[in-house]
Each structure stands twice: as structure tokens, then as C-alpha cells.
Amino acid sequence: MIDLKDMLSRLDLSSYEIKAYLSLLKNGKATGYELSKKSGIPSSKIYTVLSQLVEKELIIPIDTKPVRYFPRPPSEVIDNLSNQYNKVFAHLKEKLDFLYNQKGKDEIVAWNISGRKEIINRAKEMIQESEKLIFLGLWQQEYRSIRHTIKRAYSKGVRIITLTYGDVSLKVGEIYNHRPSDPLYREKQQRRFIVIKDNVKALFGSFPEERGVWTENLGLINLIRDFLIHEIYIVKIEKAIPDEIHSLFGKNWELIRLNL
Image (cartoon, rainbow, N blue to C red; front, side, top):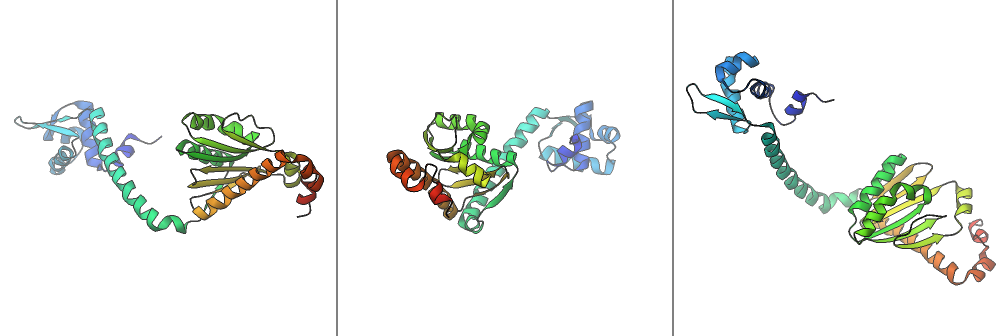
């Protein structure tokens, strides 16, 4: 657990400022002389420290003789600091995003992700952030981990287009079942996992290897999306002319897949 003084030091407070403020919280109002004695801050430093705390709005000087100092309530201090930092962070995000979107994004093709938890969490974040459209390609094992996130997105009006492998209990959005899923798994021993958010972010994972990549590169996003769309085309074609497909390519497409 992080120590209280360590946490306060992260708010750009010096060790003397921290000692002075904590002493005032613990012991109540004090003159500079009294505070120096109670906190152990050298008398040659105490008034500089108090001046800095007044400027940072952590304490209040009372016009008495001699001047006494009161600590501001912690809730008031935290709220004030939060507002200040939030303004800084908002401004910083705007400026950094501008620089990143100008050049940096196109130079980074993709980021590697490893571990089931990390891949699933990234998928949840993307689905939660989505505003218009989500493409999914998944098996039941992965669907179980993100089903509530999918349902919440759908309830917000996000369009959900899903290519399912095997029996997936998904009931929302547009669903296309890739029927020959068991042979695919037996041959390759892997489950594909795909999430595309608003055509601006894509995640491609593989289980049980628990490895994946995610990207904001439009070229890669289009490639992954086109893969899903072509898989959906196959589902639609087989549904429209099943007898012809089975005659030409086999019941599970084995006559074409196994010869590649």
C-alpha cells in the first residue's frame, strides 16, 4: 500500500510542505513558531513553507498577532486539486491527440497482446467505446466472457454484426453461423476472435494460444473487416444453394479447404 506521504508527494508537495500540512490537520491551528516546534521543520524554513502552502490553497492564514494558520478541510483540498489536474489532463489530452493523429498513428501498425485476460479486456473496452458499429467473430468460449458488454452496447443502439463459429448463444444483432466450425478447430486447433469497433479499431486474437494484435491502422482494419465480410458471404451462399455447395466442395468444404 502506498504511504500517505508518498501519495502527497505526487501532488507536487515538498517534504516540508507535507509535514506542515499533516501537523496542522493533526494538531489544529498554529503560529509559524508553534508549527516549527511540532513538525520539526527548521524555523529558518517554516515561513517559506507556510507561504507556499497558502499559495497552493492548502492552508488559510488568519490575521491575528501573531498570524495563525488553519488547514483547509481535506475534502476541499482534494476537490480543488482534482479540478486543477482534470483541466490540465483535458488540455494535455487534446494537444497530444492532435500531435498523435497528425503523424504518429500511421507509423504504428499494430500492438501485440498476450494473455486471455488482456485480450478479453481489450475487447470489452472497444465494445464499450463503440458508438455505431461492432463486427465480431467468435466462439462460445469467448462469447461467454463478453456477452454482457455486447448486450449493453446493443441496448444503446450500436449495430452488432457477428460471425459465430459453432453453437454460440448470442441472440442480439445480425448473426451469421459459420457451420463447418468443428472441422476447422480439429484441423488448426485454434479459435479465432475478432472485434472491430466503428471501423477505427480492430482486435484479432487466437485461442488457446492467447495471443493477439490490435490496431488503429486503417489498412489492417480493412483487411480484417474484409476477411469477416467474405466469411459472411460464404455463409449466405451456402444457405442459398446448399446442395450445389455440398456437391462441389463437400459437406464441410473439405474438398476445397484440405487441398489448399
